[in-house]
Image 1 (tube, rainbow, N blue to C red):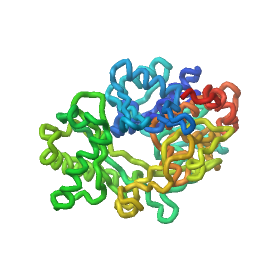
Image 2: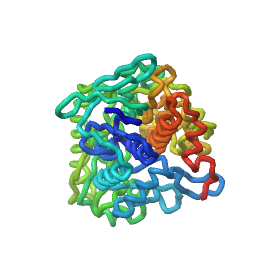
Image 3: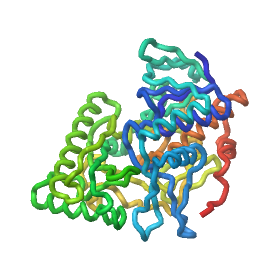
Image 4: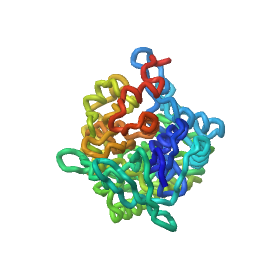
Length: 443
């Protein structure tokens, strides 16, 4: 089989890359291990979308930073009443978009079909044939065969840079001093909550209410949850349901099946432990229950490629702009302590906040998707793009990854049309084709 663009991994970046490549006329193939697209957004139950909302420092108004395919995703979800936009508090402009992950699966299917993308679910990458710094082909294990697939360009959107690894691309891993990565989290949702009463003063106040019970139970010895002295949940676009980020599994590798297996089990144990407590002691949860859990655990970090440019902590904080900037975000450096202990941080809430919020939104350059020493027809468009440990904690979120993936899809179309490799496609041209990177903010 021969294609113009092949994408490995159908997470937010991979889906966006495939949709854009298909829309631009490339013969495109998207390969995914599950039976549906969405990656962390669907299988991982990661919710809400982060990286889109930005509060303009000049006007004080909030608006969307990401357009293109991601805007189509939000618009499609709105048509199905499957997304809600919520402010964190009535006196704060910042918002988040919480979505129905089942409807998102269906929407991704529809967008892929409309773009004439070939999809190969239930399939995994086996290996790659590389010669003269060029991927000649890859082999994929399907349910009934091993397929050899050729393409003009390949996009690695696996999250773990699995294809890049098989091409002997160089990597960094974890933080510099000990190579530890951020902990994993198994996301879960609870139903049967008296949400109208709990949320009647907004999300921030609702969290404070539940956290009072949580801290009291910790202090009195009824709850052993020493890594997280506060309760984190988000609204969800269905009656009486809330989405919880309340598990933490540190010191495990997302590249080890054994570690992942242990982490999945521990994540489910923690979710059950928390839900048993909250249903017993917190009044708004007396009829609540676990509605669902992630099909897989949420993995924040594994490999990061060594690219032609490494986006840094300073780039994030200072709001760096680049001539080849192809994605933008205002999301902060959000580091969950790799040890899993809250006392690793300065403020005891389990995340490093020293970097604060970026001074303004920042851009991700196209060079971060290009391996420094790797195949000329390969881009890495996922959280494994070239970044420092700190910068990775900001750029890894899902709205941003839609934009990164869309840019990669554009680059492969340019490469095909001009008969060159993605390694020589000018990032400035990709930026121009995105269409809105140089326009002033409308808010």
